[in-house]
Length: 64
Image 1 (spheres, rainbow, N blue to C red):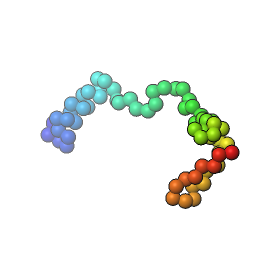
Image 2 (cartoon, rainbow, N blue to C red):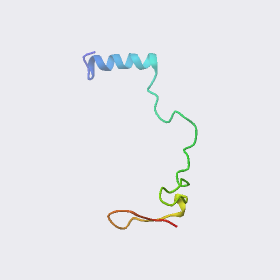
Image 3 (cartoon, rainbow, N blue to C red):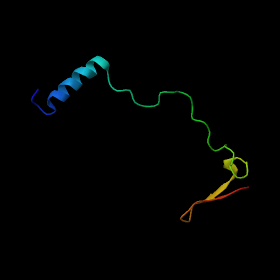
Image 4 (cartoon, one colour):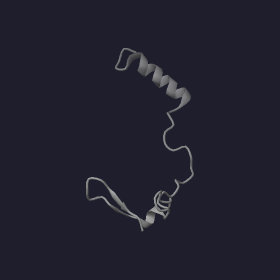
């Protein structure tokens, strides 16, 4: 136990053998909702119908 990691590495190795590795990643299998078809808060049209100009310092949105 005097090697690199010491007591922590020993305890972690034993704990992983009992509990298994950490679970990571998405827990739900539902697809993410389509965000482009949300209504515009200004005009109510779908956001996919708008045009965006990102050439300047601030993006500009043009409603249809």
